[in-house]
Structure formats: C-alpha cells, structure tokens
Length: 211
Image (cartoon, rainbow, N blue to C red; front, side):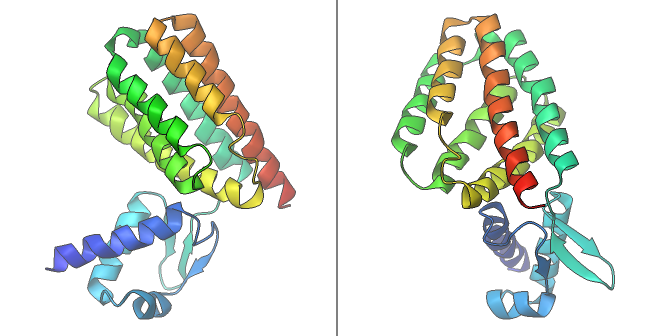
C-alpha cells in the first residue's frame, strides 16, 4: 500500500514537473504539497527523493526544495551529450532499427502535428530513446533516459514562451526516419545534428530572453 502511494505521488509530481506546470526554479513547500496531494508525509517524501535522483528537483536540507532550474550551461551540456551519443549510435547500429517501428513513429508524429505539445514531446522522447535502446547497453540506456527526461521538460518549458517552438519538428523527424529506413549513415548523422542544433538554438534564445 505504501509503495503504491509513493508511486502515485511520484507520478503526480513527475507529470507536474515535466509538463512545467511546476516551473523550473520554482520553490516547493512540503506542507503545501501535502495539502495539494493528500498522499501522506512518508509517500510524499519518498516520491521527492525519487525525483531528486532523477535530477528533477533540488533538495536543500533544512532549507527547502525547488524544481531544478535550467541554466545556459545545463542546456549546452544537455545538447552536447545528445550530439556525442545519438549520431554515433545511429551510424553504428543503423541496420538494427526495425523498419516497422520507425514507420510507426512517423505515423505518431504526423498524428500529433497540431495537437497538444505534451503529447508530441512524449513521442519525441520515446523516439530518441529508441534510437539508443537498440544498443542493448543498460547503462547507456538509463543515462539516455535521464537525458531525454530533461529534454522533454525543456521542450515543454520552451513551448510556454514560444508558440512556434514545434515548427520544423515534423519535417526533421521525417528526414531522420527516412535516412534510417534507407540505412544512409551520412544522412542520419547530418539530420540528427541539424535537429539537435535547431532545438539548441531555440532553447538558448528562450534562456537569453529571461535574463
């Protein structure tokens, strides 16, 4: 029962953080969260510790908590990690990708066009995670899952400030998937770098506008 409540509390807070209903840098108050969620003190604290391990919140003993903020360095580090991993994995494992799975992702992206931001970003997270999952390397997969969690949160945050944030995403994903289907290593590498840089520039502009 306690574990179930912890998982429910984690899922509730996780969604609030990833969707940016709780904004990056926002302070959290345990008393307010208890009143808001009614999950109980122990499940709530366990859920908060889980979120801390996922780098979604910062906990300062005897001082308080906050949603992990985005900084220019954090954003650059995030995209640098993606550019180091994704293109390399895709080129090395290009024949490992399921053609039917890739086509399914393309259909999902097309259906999500014009729909809620959160839905498209969930598909985006699943797609880019899949590009690394084919390695079968559990350490790398866990690392990339953490990277893509932050990426989805950043995308949702950027969408709050720029309604054109998704412009170009469908065409870029279509180009990546097409290159993977053709097993063209150079095109896959170039399209992924283009896609990541496109997102990086938008994210940096958003952070700069907040200064």
